[in-house]
Length: 180
Ligand SMILES: Cc1cc2nc3c(=O)[nH]c(=O)nc-3n(C[C@H](O)[C@H](O)[C@H](O)COP(=O)(O)O)c2cc1C
Image (cartoon, rainbow, N blue to C red; front, side):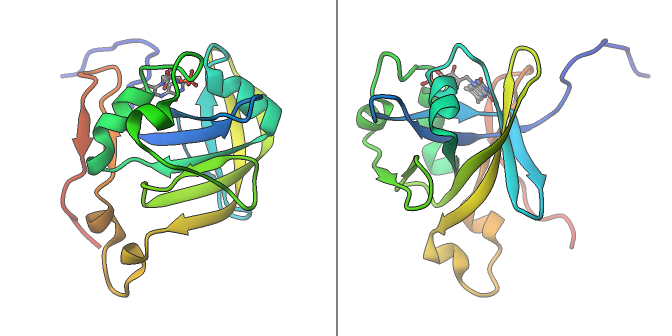
């Protein structure tokens, strides 16, 4: 038996990424993003959807660049913090003891402590409604060497987290491999 619940974002889970930018004063900032993911293969592109009320939105509009840093179990607290506080009022990198490293290819910082960092150049912007979607072409990737060993499962080593948005607002790990 099913019940109709209307037009809702009944999508479980959402990913948890940290998008990092430089604001107009050159200060590094980072926000948590659940509305995002892969959107093209060639060239490799990812998308994030961001509300104009955020500090990040203005940095994206001005610098046309961001990095996407994949949140892992070790960084759940940091993801929750960056999704709650604004760079308008706090220096999130400093508060969390994270290190912003200037990307060599785009005008954005990546988070040194996070194991995978995608440097993205914004190539398209779509105003959708509540959110504006930024399409970022992946120009370069930094990846922990431990994840690049031969014959390992990146997912098992990385331990990414996902989010139960709209449901219990909890952070979850992912389960074991089910099939090839
Ligand atoms: C798990 C999670 C996912 C989020 N996803 C988004 C998102 O995709 N887009 C968005 O605009 N805000 C999202 N937020 C809220 C922003 O991260 C939050 O408003 C943040 O404080 C903005 O930071 P800033 O003002 O420094 O840019 C999310 C929050 C959490 C906790």
